[in-house]
Image (cartoon, rainbow, N blue to C red; front, side):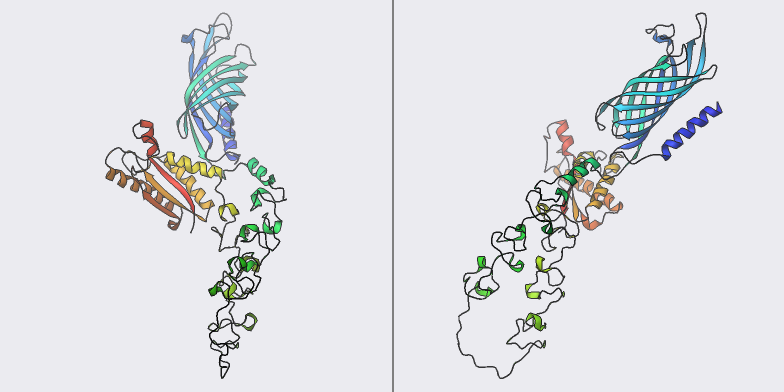
Amino acid sequence: MRKFWTIIAFGILFLEMSAQDSIPPTTFDRGLSFKTLFMDYQSLNGGSFSAFKNLNYGFEVGYHKQLQPKLQLVIPIKLGSVRSHVDSIRSINKVVGSIDAQLQYALSKPDAQIKPYVMAGAGGVMEFEGDFNAQFPLGLGVNFRAANNLDINIQAEYRHALKENRSNFQYGIGFVYRYGQKDKEDTPKEDKKDDELMDNDGDGIPNNLDLCPDQFGPKIFNGCPDTDGDGVPDYQDECPNVAGPRLLKGCPDTDGDGVADIHDECPNVAGTATNKGCPEEKKDQTPAPAPTDPDDDGDGVPNAQDKCPNEKGIAQFGGCPDTDGDGIPDKDDLCPKKPGPRVYGGCPDTDGDGIPDNEDKCPNTPGPVSNKGCPEIAKEDKKTLDVAMRSVQFETGKATFKQESYAILRQIANIIDRYPDFSVVIGGHTDNTGSSSANQALSERRAKACYDYLIQLGIPAGRLTYAGYGDSRPIADNNTLNGRSLNRRVEFKMVPNE
């Protein structure tokens, strides 16, 4: 007897220590079940299948370990007292205990409300007034979701015994409590692998690294085309079909006056930017020569030759300064205080996504041109935020969370951590029950409750804002029970940081 329970204890301890991280996020990878058993040792051993009064009772405690989204291992431990036919003359009551290893395969999606399954396995049965025998269960069951981590369970199984007069039917009803929730990156590995291999435009750069995934382009421009070959990719080139310098956004300057031809009203005659590329009219053609060669800014370049006479600079750049030392004078540098390459007009590209920081909405995180340099929010993360709108629940008429709300708020915090260049706008909404002023105040308190809890989880307050809208923005009909339920919500919107 002591050996039997020792084996059971070591079996459960081994399963806990060997838990793996292969379970999808937002699921529970372990569980405990408790069931009442109805044990039929009569029907297959000389009794009648319809004699329900002859059913015996027992109980079961089970340990569950999720192996895959639809497959789980179950270790049930059972104890009961049964009337077993020994021979044609007499029958006796026996106390039996058993332990199985069963595999359950779900016939529906993991998040379904009703989850039927099939099961099969093998186990050992100890008769405390008889012999040990091996049995092989095969059966059907169904789980009914009662809460986020609680299922009502019904199961029927046929148990084939290797020993004579021991095969039986067993029926159970009880519940399964699930725990061990995982918070992992939502994108399945298979989807990531497929995305890494896809190359829509055939330019040799996979979509997840291609800033222009639907246009053929060289690697130097991260997969974006440069039609005129001027070193300025088309998405940054104001004249994509005519070559021009980077400083003029890829447009030519025929007269060399620093004004691009498309903006120059006198493209063949040098002029000034203040006069739209045309020369200024000189009132005095013969100005009197200056008695000296003054140098007002003291940079060693006389005013007459100094392109920046009021700023101390260097002779290499005609007396103009180069504050960040990147080889581009400040007057031509789009980012004069941060060094950057000439191809980006003197601006850096901190995240290396091919979009200079002055044009990049998320300069510290790489992203595609189509999203202004910000990373795309993963589909699964968008789905989680959408589910959160309906899953964050409060006590009626209060801003106090129900217990099931904390898990979804932790998931939201994890998503925010993964997108450091995004902030979250929290909006509280109610149905039209009660006065508008009371609903407005309640929606604000509920939005702030979410704001406060996310700060407790480590999200900086500067990345969060909240507001209440009361009953002013319904998304469903307030005249129906279901519509009012949908209107009572808290929305979480990800927006790039300004």
